[in-house]
Length: 385
Image 1 (spheres, rainbow, N blue to C red):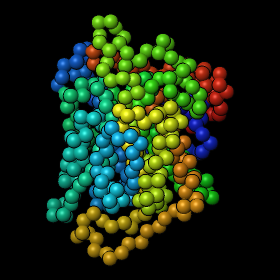
Image 2: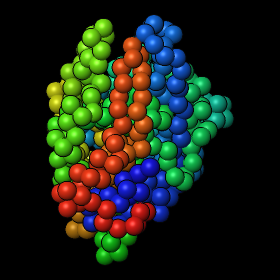
Image 3: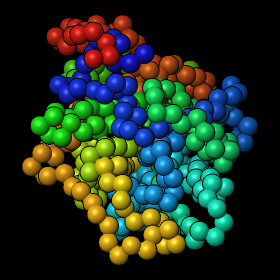
Image 4: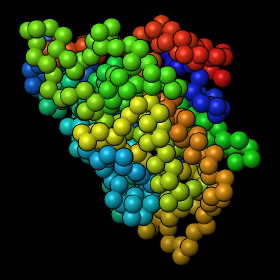
């Protein structure tokens, strides 16, 4: 279930055929989801509610054929590895992995292992992978280190360029958003022909926000569906269970933006910044305890320097660049797609009970439609526009 399946349309832009990051040609997404055990937390045993999501930037050899990329930090209480080299050289080499906070290292290593197993010996290959995180310790045995490098392989093997599973999947399995169940969400926009006709796609791992701040297409949904109606996982739900330690709104969000436009690294950085505006539309504030980290990459140049010197001894390469006078269409698309991706994460997510009986309730579809309708933002057109 997605926002448009409920007739809820975000913004004015036109989505691609999947309304997903995979609408950017060559981009694929895969998940490895780990759910097992119930009851009280026993560190190292569970309950486990976590996973890995992998984003592959193109259909070629992603380890030796980089793409231009840029990043942005709204608030830095989080981790997205590999950004120093991206800031230095503007190049992304390899897939992007997203998981929980205490599994970033193993996902980082798993991406390197995948490269070592893929590339022939003696290429001079080196890797600084991009691995990101949000904290799922409210529902998951996050200190139990249940994610392994095999899960990275599983997510990469599952990567496809079609529809993307959302909600309680992959790295988003144990995540919470605006005190409802959150997780993975995605959306896309196709820019008008006069702005290039390019596609921009977004994938989020949404794990942030307070209930009362939640907005959907400008509607104060969080105020209309208060904690007295749908309880928060951050508050004690049984007098025998202590309140969860992090305060509401403590979580984070990772945003990955892809486009087939020919952008230079500084333009990718500008595009990445716009994710913050989509989050703000949803009621996100970049709290002090939040890790709001964004990465944008562009596949519109296919003649970039290879990562191994033996494969590429050219003195110069030819690249193209979008005219900044028309880049606004990509900015608009990234903002709208970020907003809709978060809504899709909320709509797709299902109620989940994790460790110690803590429950993150799904955003109820009927109430969402009812509230949107009351504010004149109810079902506006047929699904999958």
